[in-house]
Image (cartoon, rainbow, N blue to C red; front, side, top):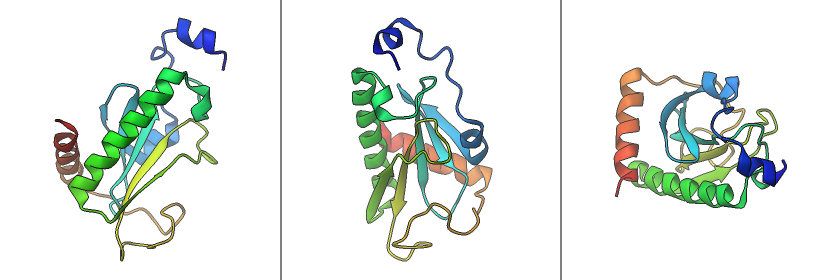
Length: 147
C-alpha cells in the first residue's frame, strides 16, 4: 500500500468486511479503527477485530497511526474479554491464511474448554449461540470496555 495514498483517501468509504467474516460472526460495535465482531461459535468467547480499511491484509499495510490504534483496540478488547469471562488465557492472533483481509482474533481460553490447549481453528463444528445469548454477551463486553 502506498502510505501517501492512504493518508489522502477517505479510509472508511471503501471498506467492506470479507463475506466470510460477515457470515461467521456478528457485529457488536465499531470501536474506532475496527469493527468488533463475535464469532458464531458458542464453544469459546471468540472476538474478531477488523480494521475498517480497504485492501489491507498485513499489519504493515496500515499507516503507523492505524497500527497504533489496532494495538490499542486489541488490548482494550482483550482486557474486557478477560474481565467478562475470567479466562485463564487470552489468545491473540492474525493469521489470514484463508481470509486475507486483515483481522485479529481475540479468544478467551480456559483449561478444559473444547480442544484445550490446542487451537480453536478447524476443530469440530461451530455451535451456535442464541440471539439472546449474543445480545447478553455483547452487553457485558461493551460494559467492560467502558471506563
